[in-house]
Image 1 (tube, rainbow, N blue to C red):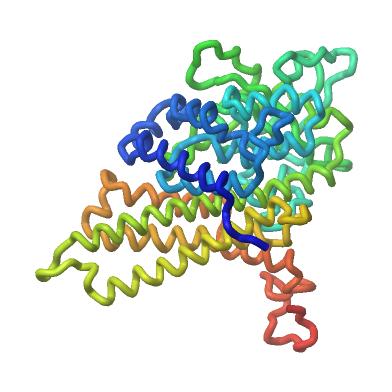
Image 2 (image 1 turned 90 degrees about the vertical axis):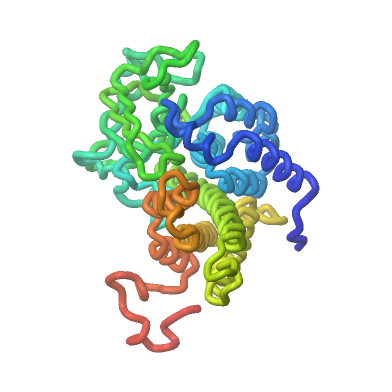
Length: 447
């Protein structure tokens, strides 16, 4: 096994880092998040057109670059360094893998090239704030995480066949036919601007309830864009106020919104669960690498500050207590980086093209989120009074650490899921409500 990156992978990192250093400083980030889309649309078009960023992990047959999860993770590490607000994670790590895995040939050829070119953006909408559960990162996704067929969540119903209409040219279903979605979902990444919504909804009623994925071709219902299509009837999208403005989120309200079943078949709930779990591994690797990039920059800026800040006639970085704290952060960061790289490599199947190892994505994400949280907290402390001010960039990393764990964690559940998938605690041992390990016979625990 050769763990070294190829020259092409190094070139992706170098090119992206040079561009972001020029276009995405702290002031530019703060200005971009206060725009209606929540990110710099011109920079996004440059990243998509010049570097093919949203299509890095898509096959060339669908307009992508033809790389894999490793290249996507490397790109996310660079965007994480500058805390870039963009629809990259929502489009390339959540929606595109599901379209590729479950979409029909017509849906793929219609939507994936446009996503790869940056002409469209997409996201995954999961009701009830259950994104981590849906992706099988904090627990099995075979339960009632999309509403359970009861009140709440998002419900899907099929309209009479005679009222159906031909699919529209943009990949959606024309009004008067297909499926209708009713319900709401919160904490949808880039949900207020995404052109394509992949919506998880329950269908079949309570007795035959199953969770399937549907496509909603949504126009920009918030900020009008030149050439934007009219809004979808019954769809209301509201940008939510979030602690981390660099990770824009929205609440979607669907009132009999026309939709199209992803895959255009009868729908296989088991296949949907498997595709979501596989997407979870890719997304976890990308988000872990992003957290590593953010932590790396926060640590580098903190080291530079303690070398310049003078107290008692000497730089505070010369004090042994400060050096020990920074050394511990460096060790945690390097461990998180190794875990993120391995998760991305494993998500791509490794050299043999096999499936990823059980729990590797959740474990890498837990390691990275914990490292970012520790580095960001120490960065605020070691910057002293200026680290507590909103004007300083240290708070960008602190808020990213806090919000990512709220959205995809907590860390202890990610680790518990990884242990469960690896088979470390059979029959619920070591889990909440399970038998404690101390009271079990040694031979009953498989390690």
